[in-house]
Length: 416
Image 1: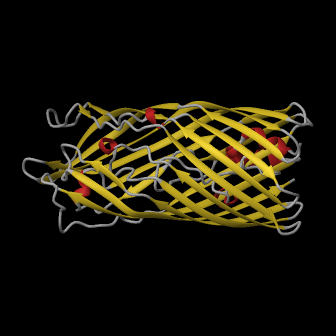
Image 2: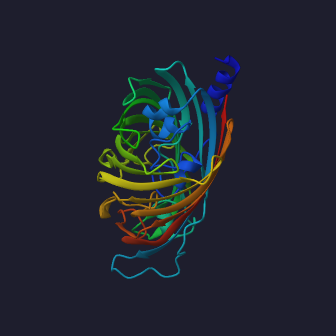
Image 3: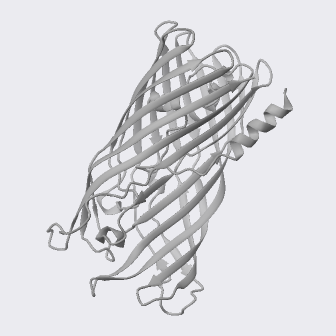
C-alpha cells in the first residue's frame, strides 16, 4: 500500500470545504455520476463515491482510488403573504434572494485484499441555505438561514462470496447553524430589531449496508444511516432599532433523522444498466426548533426560550437512473427522482420553504485505466407549499410557488 497516497486521500476527505445545500434539508448530490442518475447509484463499478451512496459497494473498487466532486445548486422561488384577514399583502418582494450553494465530496477507497476494503468519505448529508430581503415581511420569520453540514465516514467492507458483501462505518458529523431574522412587534406592527443565532456542533453516528447479487445481472442493496443528535451551543445577538447590541448564550438540540436506502440494480447487457432506489427518511425527529437563552448582557429584555414547533412527517424519495456505455471510454447517464414534502401547514417556515421535488438530470463520463471525469446537469422542480405564520410573524400565512433549483456537477477520480 502506498502510504503517501493513503495520507493524501485521508487529507482530501477530512479537509473537504464547507458546504451549503439548497432547496431542502437533505443532500443527495454526492458526485456528478450520482447527480446524473437521480441519486440512484448504489451499485457502480470502480467508483470511490460508493462510500456515500452504498458503503457495501466499495467492494466493487479494484485497487486504490481517490475521488473529488463539486456540485453547484442555485435555488429560485416566489412567494405570497397573507394578513390576518386572509388578504394578500401588497408591496412585498415576491422572490427569494438567490444564494447559491456548493455540495463538495471527497472519497478514498483502498482494497486491502480479496475480502476486505477500507474507505473514507467527507460529504454533506444535510445542509441548506435560504435568503430573503431584509426589509420584507417574510424577514420577521427569517431573512437568512444556513446549515452547513459535513459527514466524515470511515468504513470497513467485507466480501463474503460472489453474492454477499457488507459494510459498517462510523460517522463524524459536523453542523454549523446560522439563523437571522427581524424581531417583529405584532401590537405596534413594526420591526423592533434584528437577531442572529450562530453556533456549531460535532456528533457521532454510524451506518451499515449489505448487498446481495442474485446473478450477474440482478442485485439488491440496503443502507441504514443512524440518527444523530446535536447539542448546539450558540451565540445569540440582538440589534435593537434604538441602537446597541444585546448578547446571550443560546442552547438547542437538533436531531438529524435516520434513513433507509433500498436499491435494485439490473444489467440489460454489457453496455446498459438501470438502478431503482427508494429512501425512507424519518423526518419526524424534526419536531421542533427550540432555543433557550441565558446570561443576557441586558437583563429582563430577552425571553428565556424561543420555541418553534415543526412536527415534520416521515417521507420517501424515489429515484431511477440509467447508464449506457457508448464505448470503453465514454458513457451517458440520465435520472429522475421524486421527493415527497414532509412539511405540515403548521410546521413550515422561510428557513426551509420547500414542497415536493421532482429532479430531472443527465450526464456524461469519460474514463481510461487511471482517470475518470464526469459532468452532470439537473433541474429540480419544487412544488408549492402553504404554511402558517407564527404569532410574532408579520403575516398570517404564506404560499411558496414557482420554485426550482439549477444543478451542475463535476467529478474527477484517480486510480493508483
